Picture 1 (cartoon, rainbow over the protein chains, first blue to last red):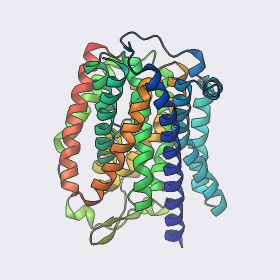
Picture 2: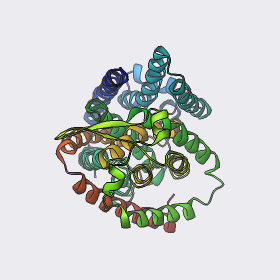
Picture 3: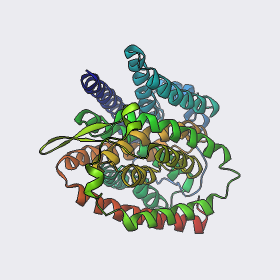
Picture 4: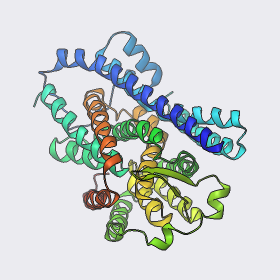
Length: 126
Length: 278
């Protein structure tokens, strides 16, 4: 029985990861093509660190910028989806262990999700 | 160099990084960081932000296949993520006050010494010993696919490995790396797990370790869409290729490949530490 549950869990987690990276890649490409068309022949300068503009530094800013149609904002939204994928994977597993009543792993996943949430909230990114 | 040329070059480099990362359980930063800083003259902060994105892409892209195929041990990965994420948080917290250059050099030396014996196979006595009692209680035993059918294994020395995962997490937070090398060595040498289980479970974990510090890097403006775009797409393509190779590759060949890559990584860490690039 345990082996069956583990096999099903593996398929669900694999499916979530695949969906996350596919969506992220699609959004990154959707921003990447217009970005290359508009800026492809410019000479980029990354030798000195200037940092990204505030609009590309927080989840809310990125969402606003992407919705306004800025190609760099759309790419950054794809990156955001990519960064959210491992967090979503932990949340999915937490729900799964709660349903199964596996107390030890409910506690394990809850701690991991808690640390991730603490770090994301503390960064000023959300 | 214009944006189109830079994008093409980065996509090709990222494809190699994704391939190497998915086969070794490392994040691919070993390829991305020197490509950006040494070959293209990109500032180290942009390079670290881009490498972090590459770690998450390698991990999620390859784990999608490894988890379904039954290579990664989900419970073991989750159990150790407690140690790696707490460690990463602690490391990031003290990073501004810690001697990161000295730590980078020390980490490089640890990697070099582990490379010296990482090519050795486990003795048969270990492979055939009865399962570890603590591993059974925590539900950490498992099986993984081999050409001859599923093979059972049991992790050993779990408390020591848990401590080492905490150290790996601290290194991630301090140095902005995925520290997959440390994780693979802990699982392979300390826990005596089958090689493919060690690398694929490390691959499964590094995405979450990296996600723990991703918010901080985005908020500091280290993640640039122009650099991240070709890296994400290239890494995902390379990782997809790597997961196909892993299924048929011999563990011995992967071990030799891994040893070569960590020697390179060790030299990089030592050089960065001495030059003060971190």
